[in-house]
Image (cartoon, rainbow, N blue to C red; front, side):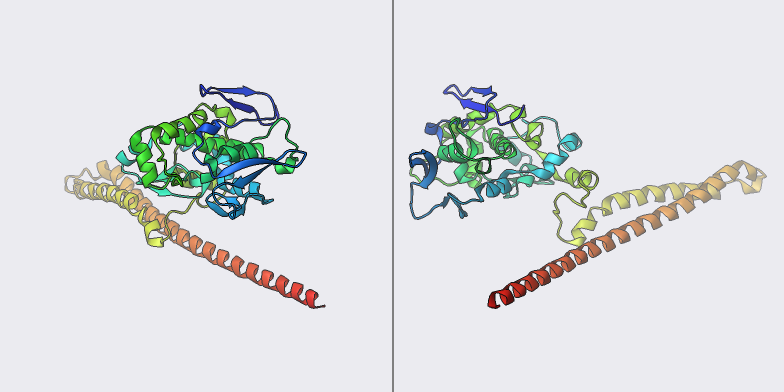
Length: 371
C-alpha cells in the first residue's frame, strides 16, 4: 500500500492508523514542549507558514540558525538529521549485531549503571550505538518538540495544496518517528530525565517553567504507541547496536573497511590484536614444550625407538605449522598497516585533485565573467 499512513492522536494517547495519505502529530498542541513556532495562514489559498514567536528577527529553525524557516532545502536538512541509509541497508542483517526488539533500549540510568559514558553525537547513524564503555546518543532537536513544526513540515493535511516536492518523504517521516520513539524508552524515570538534562540530550527551556517528568510523559507517550511497521527499518526491530559488530559486518554488507572509525591512532588500533595473539602464542608454546619433553623421553636407549616415531613426525609437522602461522600473522599485520597507509594516501590524493578541479572551474568562470 503506497503513501504515508495516518496516525491520529487522541487524548487517551491511543494511535489509530488509517489508510489515507495524511498523518497527524502523535502529541497534542497542549503537550508540546517548545512554543517558539506558530502556524499562520496567509492569502486566500490559506497556505500555512511558520513564524518565530519568541523573536521575529530570527527566521530560522530553533536551534538551527543555518536553516531558515522558509528555505527550499529544509527537507534536505531534515534528511541529514534523521535518515540512516547505511543502517537501513544493514537492517536485514542486524540480527547478527543486536537483539531483535525495538524496545531493547535501556533507560539512561541503567546505561550509567552499566558503566557507559553517554556521548553526544549529531550523526543519526550513531544514535544508540555503543562500544566498550561509551554509548552514543543524538540529542532531541528543539524544533521537534513543536506541534507547529510537525503540522507544517512532517505531516500533511487532507486539504493541503503542497506539491510533492514540498512534502516530506515517507522515509523521512518514518525515520523521525523511529528516532522520537527511542526517547520513550530512554527517559522513563525522574533520574533518566535528570541525566538527560545533565548530558544536554534535551534542549534547555527558554521559559521559566521547568520541564518535569509529567510534562515529558504527556509529550512522548504518543510516540511510544507507534508500531514497528510505521518507522524506518533501522528502528523497526532494533534498539541499541554494538558498534564493534557493525564495523565487522560492514566489510561484508556495505563493502566498507569500517562502519565508523573509533580509533584514530594506529597504536590504539593494533593494540586490540595483542591480547588474542599473545594468547595464541602461549598455547603454541605450551604444546611445543610438551612435545619437546616427549621427544627427550622417547626411550631411545631401550630399543623401542619405533614406538615414538609417530610423535616425532607429529612434532616435526606441528613445529613447521607453528612457524607458518607466525609468519602468516606477521604478514597480515604488515599488510593491514600498508593498506591503512595507502587508503589515507589515496584519500589525501583525491582531496588534492578535487581542490585543483574546483580551483580550475573557478578560474574558468572568472575568465568567462570578464569576457
